Image (cartoon, rainbow over all chains, first blue to last red; front, side):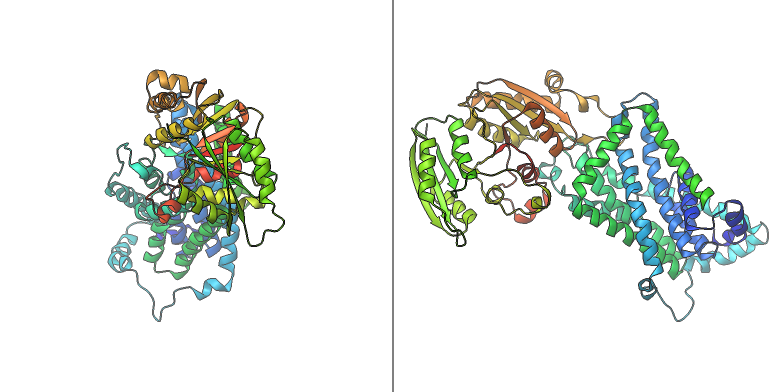
Length: 323
Length: 276
C-alpha cells in the first residue's frame, strides 16, 4: 500500500480534495463506512503518512474518521432487522449507543489530539534510532514488490494493498475463537465489574486481546442474570474498547517502522483515554442518561433512524467538500 | 415469637425525630423493644440528648424504651452498639437527599451505616402520616427473595399497598431478541418467564411472612437507578425497600468491584429507605 500510495497523491489531494485535517477526517469516515471496518482505513492513513501523502495531523484525523465510520457498522446490522420488522428500539439500542458514544467523545478527542501533536512533548517521546529502521516485512516483501512494479502500474498497489489488509484482518477475526458463552447464572459474576470505571477497564482489557469491539462486547453477554448485556455496562465498556481497538493500528504503525506513525496512533489512544476518563469521573450519569434518552427518541420512529443515518453519512461528504 | 429489638438513633436534630415517627408508622407489635441511642461526638456542642429522648419517647408511647448515650464517632459507636446488643433494625432520620456537589460527600451517618451494617437499616425522610404505598425493588435473583421476605416482615403490620418492582436493564447485542424482554409484569407471570417466576415466588414469600395488603407486581425497562426513581415518583411511594450492598463474608475489594445500586438509591431517592 505504501508503494501504491505515492502516485495517488495527486488524486487524493486534488480530485478527492483531501488536503486538510477536516477533509482527511471525512475521507477516513467515509472510507470506513463503505468498507464496514475501521482498521484497514486506519492502516491506510498510516501508509499515506509514511508515503508523505498526508501530514501527521491529516493522518491523525483520518484515523479518527475511521473510528467514526466503523461505529456505523454496528448500527447497520440493527437497522437491517428494523427493516425486517423487528422491534426498533431493541434492535438498535446497542448499535446506536456505540455510535453515539464514539460521535460524542470524538470532537474532544480531535481537539486534544491536535494539541498533543502540535506540542513539543510529542517530539520528546518519539522513537529515535541511530540508523534507519527496517521493517522485516520490507526486507521480506520488498524485492517481490519491486518485481511487480515492473509489470503493473504503481498506483494499483494501493487498492491491492487495501484488499490484502482487509483480508488479513478478516482472517484474524476468523482465527480468534468464538467465545460466545452460553447463558448461565454465574453467581456474583453478573454483578461483578459493573462500576463504570471498572467496566471501562474491562472493555479496554478485553478489546486489547480481541482487537474487535464487537467481539469483546459479546463477552459481556454472560455477565448478566439473563445472559444479555445490561444497559449500564454498554457505555463504559465501549469507552474502554475505543482505546485498545487501536492496538492493531499500532501494530501496523510499528510495521511501517515510522516513529511519526507510531506517535499518531499513540496520541489517538491517549486522547481517547483522557477524554473518556474525564467523562467517567466527572459526569458519567448525566452522559449515560442523555445518551439513553437520545437512543429512545431515535428508536421510536423509523424515519428518525433513516434521517440519522443520512446525517451521519452526509457529514463526511460535507467535510470533504468544506475541507 | 421473640420480640423485635429496634435501635433508633438521634443527634437532637429535627431530622432525627423522623426515625421514631416512621417506626411508629410501622405499627410494630407492642412488645417490641425500642432503644434510643445518642452519640456525643467530640466536635458537637449544644446537643441535648436527654430532651431528644423525651420527645421520642412521647412519639413511641406504649413501647418499652431504653436509652443509651455513647461518646465518639457517631457511625462507629452505633455499629459497636449493634454488634454488642444484636438489634433487628436500626432507624435513623435524615434531612433529605443530597443534591449537586454534596452528592459526592458520602459522609452522612446514614450512608456510612448502610455500607457497614449487616442489620436492616431504616432511613427516614419525608415521613407521611400514614404509610400507604411501599415499593419493594428486586434484582430478580435468588438472594432477593430472602431480602424481600425480610423487608416484608417489618411492614406486615401496616395495610399499605405494596408495589413489587423489577427493572429489566438488559438489552440484546444482536437481534433477534427474545420478545419476553419487554413483557409487562402480569404477562411475564402468566407466561412463566424467568422474571415472571421470580415475581410470583417473591409474592408468595412476602405473603408467607404475614403481608396481607395488595401486592402489585411491576416491571420496567431502562437504567435501574432511573427506573426505580421513576416508579417511586409515579406511584407516590413513601418507602423504598431494597437489598443491602454490604454482605457477610465478602471482601472489601469485591464490594468495591460490585455494583452499588443500593448506595446510589439511598443518595438519590426522596422517600424513606429500608435497606435489608
